[in-house]
Structures are given as structure tokens and as C-alpha cells.
Image (cartoon, rainbow, N blue to C red; front, side, top):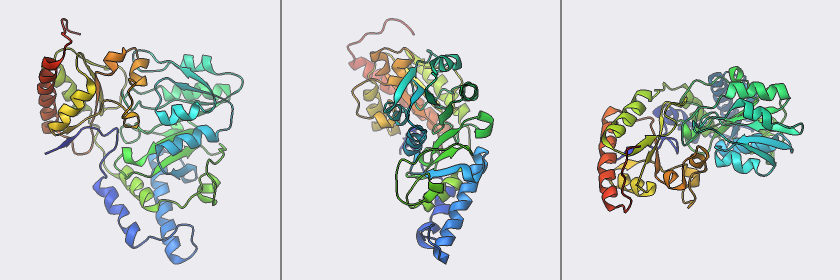
Length: 370
């Protein structure tokens, strides 16, 4: 039997989302841009989903742009804001960092707590700055950034503010109006909707230039036939009851600390989303531990799924001060739909047993508790 603890990479589709989207493949399969009955039925479903998303985020339906996922939403926000100087942080997801690197860029460091200072953002803003982009929750550490404070900094400077909320939505309450963001991204497959659908919130009055061209879809902000099944599933997923998983995360961390020596929970005292734990296992190669746990029936991660296969250590972990060796000895555990206490306890034991085995094989001898 397998147990899945990699929900920050992707999530299973919830029963509510699956039930909502299935009729879109057989009954209401029309093109939402068509004026005939079949098209208008699809349009009604699309707009109902738009209202669901808007209600969840605390904004108006006209401010919701459906996209193909978080990467497109981030790219549309950053590159669509207009050319010029942009400010971001050292721990952003590649979808943000790589898009920002196409422009004149300033990267602001974070502290060992995995949190960026609003004052550092303020100092990085220049007269020609057009956009600040700071993620809401980090995908590896789970740390929450002071988004509302940074939004005020950007507003005072007359600069647009974008936040990548892919790892925040569905895990904590998100109200885009209360946060004060101008642009906010989310991705369906991170919150129990299918892959291939995402959202960019665009505050009313903010103008962005499209990054792909074709029809006049999504109020001329994103051309392409709308993914009605995906949008419907996303709306249903957001409407479904959600657990916080904070107690399970704490149980996992406590159990590993008690049973496995020479470990460190990174950013444990920082504000974090409740489902994410990032742990360094000193003296153990992270990918070896991932494989060992996989063979025991557990899916976990040694970093961002978008960086899988990279020989370089995680830029997020080195940004908070971990050495290359420490970064490569670090695993991410992310909880979600289907996880319970029994699974967590089995995972703790599997981690403990795997660490004993791998440390016996390691030439590195640990001599002090960290």
C-alpha cells in the first residue's frame, strides 16, 4: 500500500471536483465562445466557476482570468505588467524567477527564517520599477511572506505588486482585497483540481498585456478556448470542505525529531502553511532517502518538482544559509487529502528505519547532535 506525502508537487483530484467536471465531457461539452445552446450551456458553467473562484478570493468575477496553471499565471502577471525594472526574492519558484530574469531584475535576499523583509523590498525599488513579485507561501519551506506589508510598500511607491499564491490558496484563508495585491496567481492541481487550469487575479483597473494571441477570450487578457471542465473542477475544489493538516504536520516533525538523531526542521519558528515540513537529515544524501522511502511505499520530495533532475542544490535552501551538502540532505514532506495519523506514524517509522540503514552505509560519521 502506498502513502502520498508530496502534495506541494501535485494533489489528487477531490471527489467534489471530479463529480463537477465529468458532465463537461459528455453533456455540456460545447465551446464557451459559441452562440448556440451548447456553447451557452458551457458558458454558463464557466461563469459559475468564475464566480466560485472570485467568492473564494474575495474579489469580483471580472477580476478572474482563467489560465492553464500557475506558470502561465505568473508569466502573464510579470511579463504582462510592461517592460522595466522588477523586484523579487531569492526564494521564488522558477516560474517567477525565470520570468523576472527576462527583465531588469533586482533579487532581494531572505533571512535564515525564510522570510523577506518589507524594508529590504522598499530599498530595492527604483524610480523605474514597474513590478514587485513576492510569493505568498514558499513551495519548499512553507514559509509565509508578509504580503500585506509588502503590498503597502509597493502601493506607496506607485508600483504594481504580484504575489504567487500557488502554495497558499487552499491551505490558508486568502482575501486578495485584504492583502492589497494587484495580481495574484493560483494553480488548480495544487488544491485538488486537475492539472491544466489556473487563475490570475487582476485587480480592477490594472492593465496587463496578453502574452499569447488569438481570440478575445478572458476579456482580451488570455487568448485560447477556455478549459471549461478544468475551471468547473477548480470552482468545486475551492468550495469543498478543507482540513488544515497543522496537527498532522506537528506530529510528523515531533516523531522524526524523537526517533531520528541529527535532524533539523528548517524555519520551524517562522509563520508557515500548516501542511509543509522541510527537514535536513545530516549525513544522508536526500535523493537516497527519497528512494528508500519510495521503496517502502511513501512518496516524498527532495525539493521542488519543477527542479527535479537538477544537479545543483535547491536555491531556496542555500538562500536561507544551508550549505550545499545540507541542502542536498534535505527532504520536503507536504500533507493533504487522504493523510491521517496512522499514515503519519507509518511514515515516521519508515524515515527512522531508512535513516539507520543509510547512515550505516555513509562514510560520513556524525559526532554531535544538531
